[in-house]
Image (spheres, one colour):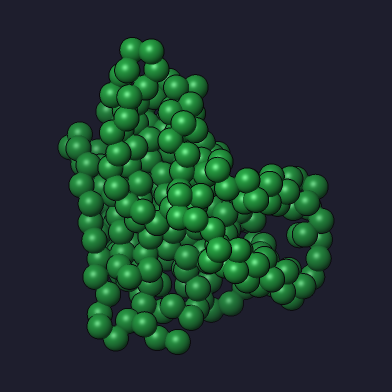
Length: 249
């Protein structure tokens, strides 16, 4: 069994270094994997499945090629691309994965999440998340013309970046008590998530019996590619360096 987990690529045309590294990885290292799990924020922004340009078409066709080769691909919504829909899944040959979801790795249940819902100390963000994940809000947004949705997305992103500059660091990380709560609710001792851009392996104690739990946090793709691999019953991390000339604007 060979499975890959990635998140927080934040793909966009103005960062060709990231998309080049991702596409090369898809066509080489990801081949022959049993499954690929993309745990949110594949794109920096996604305003609807009717978005069509050369950049996104290249990404979509490359994911589809991996799917056609026999790899099962699962995509979870992130806070940047929660408008990914059924048409995107059809075009890429992927399946939309609920947040949270449980999978089995060699009979070991593992909880998968994007991770933003765990940041409960950031009350402002949690309120915003509840608003934009409301089905009626999403329906209203998708009914607007594409160019208007793109403008709204830019405004929301600018507002988010401005707000985050003034927040304490711990507000934008997960709440430990919330992590323990959701792992106990789902009866798991293993959690994999992204969102925080703080890759690490955390050990924690769960429940009255103080069972040992493990929380693996995926890295983002800002300065290098970051892949969590599951192979032969164990995990390892693959880092994908970018060339020195990577940052192109």
